[in-house]
Length: 368
Image 1 (cartoon, helix red, strand yellow):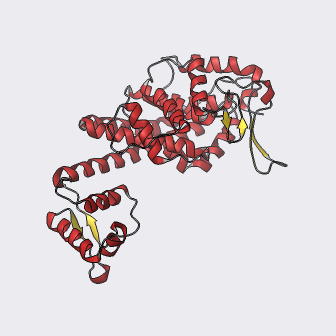
Image 2: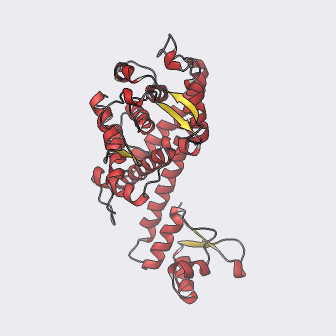
Image 3: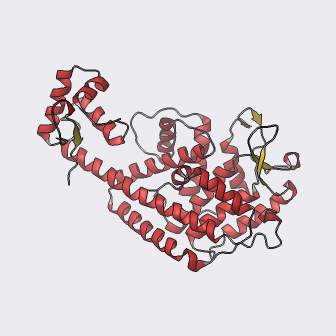
C-alpha cells in the first residue's frame, strides 16, 4: 500500500519534539549565513547568489541523471539576474528552462503557487516536448494514457517498481489540495514545510516527467519564504545529490509507509543543516578570494599569474602547486614559471609549503 491509498491521506504527522534539535541547529545556521550575506558588499552578494543558483540548477538535474554544461548554466543565471559577468557563454533552451523554473521559485517566492505556474515550470523543462527520445505531455497534468504511472528501475523486461502514483483522474483534485495547503500562511515551520511539500508533491506525481525537479523547486520556494529574501547562499539540491542513494531509498520507504513522517523529516532537516554548513564554508572562501584580489590587484599581475591563481582558488588544480606544473599548464618555460612564482612570493601572494628541493610546492597566502 502506498501512502496515497491510506484513509488518512494526506494528513501527514510528525513529532515536533523529535525534530527540535535539528530544527534549532538549522535555524541558527540560517541566521548566521543570512547575517554574513547582509554584511557583504553588493558585488560579493551577487557573486555568492550566482554561484549558489548555478550549483542548484546543476545539482537538481544531476539527481535525475542529466549533466548540464556548467558555463551555460552560469551564463543563463547571470543574464536572468541582470548581472554583468564577463565571458558569458550562450545557453541552450534546455538549460534556460531549468534556470527559469528555479529563479521563478526562489526570486518570486512571495507569489502564490498556482496550477498554471506549476504547468509553466514543467513545460519549461521540456521545450521540445520530449524527454530524451520520447514525446511527452507538457504544460498539462498527465492523463489516463499514462496510467499506471510508475517509477521503475532495472531491465525493461523485468523492472523493479519503486512507486506507483495516484491514477490520473485524481491528479487535478490532489494537486489543488496540495496548492491550497502550500499557500496557507499559517502552516508549519518553513523548514518542515519544505520537507513535507517535497514528499507530498512528488507522491502526487502530477506530470508525465519533471516531478522531482519541480518538487525540489517547491522545496526551495518554501525555504525562501521562511527566510524572506531572494538571496541564496546554500544549495539543498547539491547536498541531496551527494546523498542521492539515501534520498531515493528514503523516499521509497516513506511512500510505502504511513502518514507518520518524523524520520523522513529528520533526514531532510539534516540535509538542510549540512547544506547551510557548506554554504558558510563557501561564503568564507568567496570573501577570502575577494580580499586577496583587493590586496594584490589584477593589473599588477600578468595573465598567466591571474589564470593560474584563479584555477587554484576554484579547486580545479590537481595536487600541489609546483613550478613544473605551472610551466606545463601555462605552456611556458620552466624559467618563466620560476619568475612568475618568485614574483608572487615577493608580493606575499604565495608562500612556500614545508619541504624543499625538487618537492618544493606553494600555497596561496590569503590576507587575514
